[in-house]
Image (cartoon, rainbow, N blue to C red; front, side):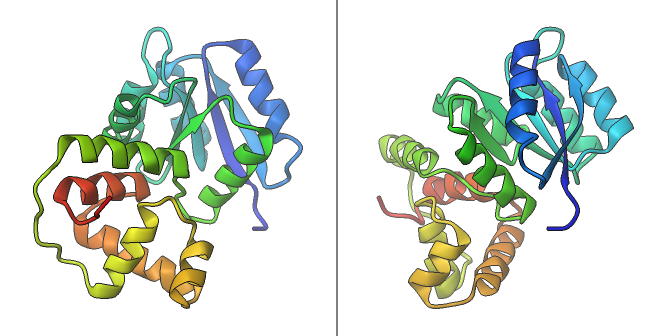
Length: 214
């Protein structure tokens, strides 16, 4: 990755923004291009700075991160949005995904985990943590949705099973004995068929339709 991924940091707390900037400045793959204090500023700066990725806090004054994310994804669909929060409530995750967020990052993660997560975004792997995969599994096991016939091929179903467990493209390629490029192609086709944007949406959708067994 020759060109650094350009990041806009959005958080109403100065120390939080400074901490995130300090954490990421050690990695040449990332470039902080701006900071915003609330959702309204995030929208304005996204238009001016055209970042690759917005790190968006959920709870902020004037306009929260969920509302700002919905606006940004509607008007700047190429911009990726990762929600930042101290909460790991499944309802927050689903709300963020419904508004168009492509990821969900807990603030208390170790710096190396931040790096791995955001770098995967830069490589278009659209990662989902195994913890989040487990929470989605738990939620849909509890609600017990009925099964609907899947339009996916047998191989696409195989890929989906591993995606739902939170496996990376590399892990899936090793388990299915196919290349990472082939995994990416399958995942792209799956998302296209189902009109979804990322792994979190895909996992939630698949559990809801009963395509994945606990």
